[in-house]
Amino acid sequence: MTEAIVVGGGLAGIAAAVAVAQAGLQTLHVAPKGAPDRRTSALMLPSVAYLEAAGLIGDPADLGTALTQIRIIDATGRLIRSPETLFDSSEAGLPAFGWNFANVRLLAEFEAAKAKLGNIETVDSTVVDIERVADGWRLSLGNGDTCTAPFLVGSDGKKSFIRSAAGFRSRESGFTQAALVADLELARPLVGASVEFHYPQGPFTLVPAGGTRANLVWIDDREALRALQAEGSDALRAAVLSKSQHLFGDIRLLTPAHMFLLSTLSVPEAGHDGVVLAGEAAHAFPPIGAQGLNLGLRDVADLAAALKETNRSEADWARKASERYSQRRAADLVRTGGVVDTLFRSLLSDLLPAQAARAGGLWALKLLPPLRKQAFGLGMGSR
Ligand SMILES: Cc1cc2nc3c(=O)[nH]c(=O)nc-3n(C[C@H](O)[C@H](O)[C@H](O)COP(=O)(O)OP(=O)(O)OC[C@H]3O[C@@H](n4cnc5c(N)ncnc54)[C@H](O)[C@@H]3O)c2cc1C
Image (cartoon, rainbow, N blue to C red; front, top):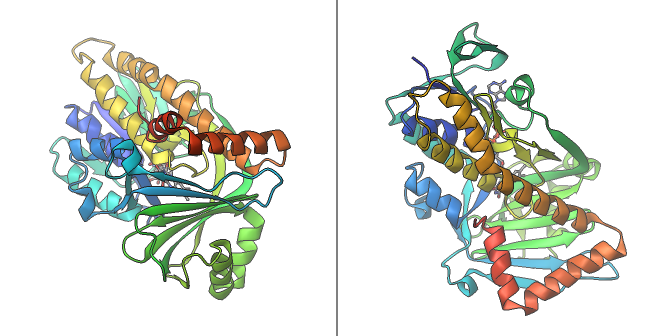
């Protein structure tokens, strides 16, 4: 008998399906095959440690690039500007802050880990309807099948069908900005340093991807990015050179650019009545400070812990597990979502008090080692 259904074939969905199966539940994973995920993920050391411990990846050095420095350059040209700030992982006594991985490589590793488990079945379809029934949740799939289980995990992304159909409240607000991503080759390598240029319309970030390669995450006005993309690769390359202030010499685009629309999304509770939300189904925000998937993996870690604490011989175990999960996630979701949202809005703000607060904050971080240590902990998701 199926004990849990996990919906969603993104990184959070596969990691959740593996965690649920590893907790011993007979699991059905509803994961429609989609286009390759062209994004990359900077994952902090605690997330990487979780992935290794869960058997989702092997040695991170075989898969990604170590992130040893974060350099922030204020390119706003505003009246009150921040100092250039360099964070080095050695200050925190760490070999690196984390690792940068291509999502397609992570997905392949996660799939390989899933294939080793005997108590999980995967179906390539979408959920089109759900219904509360006496023995749990009955799902209707796009391929005409139905399936029922007492425990349901919605990891079906920002537009989550499970979230709305299972009665979760949520709050979403969109931005006029989008994020443009592409793989680049730089004449001068980044050597482990992630470099963020803070422009008035959003940050322009180069993340090291091994050797002379870098991943671009450029947040800017959506229409301006669209117009630039339409002009073709030469115009895009010229804009990337200019935005990088020619610090890395010549730049070549290795892949076409892809655009992602940005919004923030939060839920007041991440679990009830035998259903839990994980990954972007529960939280989304702009990709600054590399927090999205890191938070999603903390969802998965708490899902594993909540299931471990649950006695499945009790009649109402699925409801209890979902409530336990919701309690475990509450503080982290509020804290991380709040910090990223405030940071993003302060980056875009034309208001002098916001500019002063951000510049003051960066000066304080630059000059006060104990504060830097606290910021390292917060950025890395320490609990
Ligand atoms: C430009 C950019 C850069 C980023 N960089 C970082 C970073 O450096 N570090 C970091 O931690 N985070 C980063 N993030 C965030 C991170 O990419 C996301 O948090 C993460 O990929 C979300 O994974 P997910 O599995 O929750 O959602 P998704 O990847 O959106 O997957 C959702 C899945 O659900 C499936 N689905 C949808 N509807 C249904 C349905 N009805 N039935 C069945 N399945 C369904 C979809 O097909 C898909 O497989 C970045 C995000 C962006 C946009």
